[in-house]
Image (cartoon, rainbow, N blue to C red; front, side):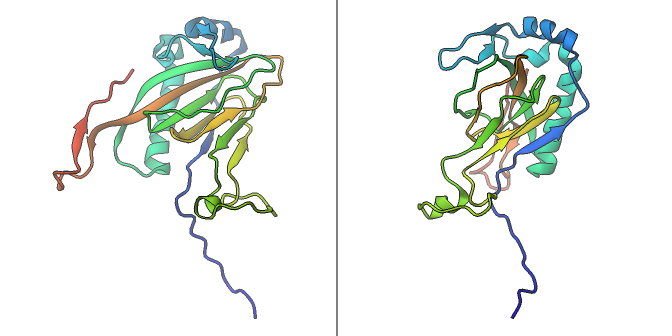
Length: 214
């Protein structure tokens, strides 16, 4: 007796996407970027965060802002499969020096985030929640033969310079210690729904919102 076919239905997936782009911020413009961002130290870890929370509004980052628009449109239309309008509500940058790492966190009050890697190749991104898909229903330990989307509670991503990573806002993530001598710099943006929400044929579930965009 043989297995003649296996049909796979991956239900309730977590849509993490890594976009490879051909847009790079030249090395000689990194110092100007740092001035635009005006980084500050944080109390919870040693990664610096920009004081400017609308960095992509700066005219010198106009081309990057257009790239974010292109990626966000693809992510919510083609990946999430949604017709709704989405707008960028904030954009920021973080800077990590050698040995720095970013604490475990998520992004509340948003739908999804995009993270562009100005410089990288170090400081791996760890995404995931406390339980795997298996453990959400059956809370027990197990021995893993091969890591996959069902048995893994987190995943390690190694972004490269020019990559944009798209994640949902409630997805927990952190970085491993940055090992490079060059500062690790990212630019991120948050997105939320705008316009009509729900189905207007049902007067109890539909409403309209206006999201403040940058």
